[in-house]
Image (cartoon, rainbow, N blue to C red; front, side):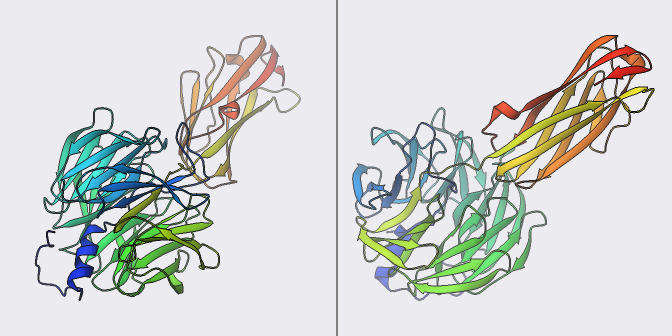
Length: 465
């Protein structure tokens, strides 16, 4: 099995057997989960890349047993599932390829050549692109999932080891093991727009669900770098167990889990304080982990014992240990994308005894469960009307008022207001309609995306709403 390139920093003290297993055990990357559902896919499944068997194991997440196996390429080392749960992507370390697996039929439907020694991969939230690091090629390959072809190859740092995507899919973060950096890739232009220096031997990465923090497991100095994704500054570097080899964040964004390969432990970090709150024993040589979409348990796989451990996320106790194939290198649950239900409200009133305008109040309430970003609401006024006295964040063009709300926490409500002079409204019934036109993540409830307010104009100085 090929060795990592020599470089001048301290190397971990691995035996030959451990080094071989570690090379086969690629860091977990992919989408993070939510509740256990996947539109059109198989929700109660997880997938394990068994590098020694050249197979993808299918796990029933209720019984925790292996219920199927799919032959893939040479030495599978990383796995990620598309947001619909219908396709599984497997990076084959010694095959220099990605196997595309149909989840329903459990068959390989395509094999995509990528950069040499593909060590990690991730699927964007739309399912349209897969990002694959080629460790021996120093590249990030971009796969179009519609055609299963590589549409871009991005040069990154030296011996890239992992890729993680932000929730919007606009950035890819690539850890470069040999030069202790993270390359920040703009996914619109497929170019590196920044480089962040982190700890020694960065080997795995995970992004908090709100996108505000990147967590990097530094294998060579046994730390985690906490990166502020707005400034790209490292804000904390907590020490964890020996040789952290995989890392994951729970859906709530409150806990980070690092699997420490050399001492067989699991470190738990509180994201509010960046402090390690627990270090617990787990399987020998933990090579990968993932958090179940419900947040109630984790899967941790052992590259040396060939087992899968089920770890309770509250007590950190191992509740089950089951066989996991030959040298399990990566594990991934079927993901569930975050959702934010933005409800729109609109009211109107004609204030005073002799009103001269109609006052409109627009609300956007985030019913959650995730934070909402980039919310835009457009209000169509009656023909010929024009708005005045607009709140900050609102603009008017002709008879359309557009209000934007950059960020809405779960449960938060934003309010805007504007006026329409009565002399610009026709006599009789008039109606304004507000509609949410944009927000992220996905809004699951279109029924409350619009609201209307009606008034009756009697004269230029009299109206009823």
